Length: 74
Length: 370
Image 1 (cartoon, each protein chain N blue to C red):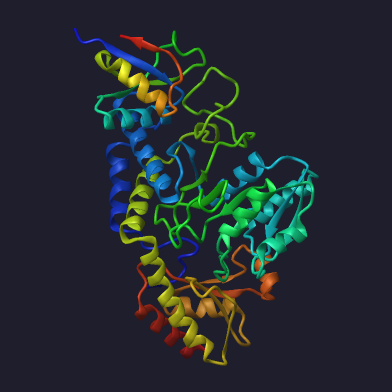
Image 2: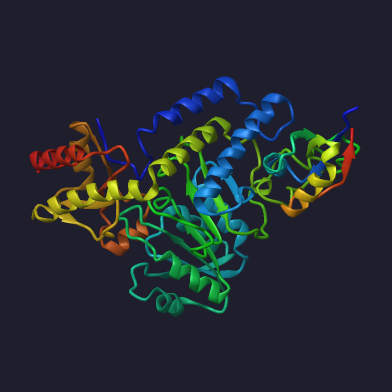
């Protein structure tokens, strides 16, 4: 089964940036909105990608200064 | 019609700007940053592409590009959000009302005091030092005058600001698209500019480009698409200063405008416009019926008067011959005080689509009228 991971980000702009950076590094990603349980401040966005790339994706996001919230599985 | 008022707004726009603005309106004008359905994300993609294009042009990070509706909004945000209250600022003697009025309004309320320096001083550091006070916190300065094209020595001002711990807020309204501006290389903290002038985007577009994050109060509050449960604006760029729906179709067009500018090349556009400026300047300067006012030799903007005529009369006469020029004070009374042209001037400003034939037609019309 293909499990999807979602990394929470600060904003739509950061999510847009994250998608492009992940794609440049070979990780297929998309912008998603976070559900109310994971966004305590209200509307929030993140990026989704296949969990097989989780380690690489989290590393790329942190290196790019985009690391922010937790990474969830869906 | 011959359009010679490109310092007010460029016209026409490149065809790709019209095409993409309309395509966005028809095909993908969702509300950028508001939701994650396909149309909202497609709109957000377009906005982000425009951020990236502007960021590349001015040497900044995409998230440090804050979109506004024009340069005036951008300057108001920069001045009111980033300049500490009860401090002192320095502005140049060529500032537009977009700088002068917000500074004057804050001064009227006792929240700011202001000194004026001469942008044309041969040693700008010495000039700034003369006006520097212990409470000075910022230099707010146009990079090119909208009246006569006088240019600021931006790198020297940036260096001075860095050395003295001052914020450098630059008005790039007449510089963006006409001269290369890299916010980091020039020591600019906040660059404010319109999208509809030298970047050839639609009206209703402008931006702040920050070289780094700056703590600041918000000026306009409202929906930002994130952290909606909070009663305050998000603490990060660019959303902190982008309350309300962005003009997505206009920004899609602006992205194409920036693409046009970078495709042709800022230096090539500047050289083309400057050749027309020099051609006009030489024709008018040799004729005693005209007074040409001081300008930078690399300018694309020329102010002049017809001896014995009010500039508005000249403008009306040219308009009658299908030639659009700007007359009056050009919203920059300080510049006119500096140039001793309080009665205003006739201003000709060239764009990428003007030609030498336009210069000849203007000169023929002027000679026929005076």
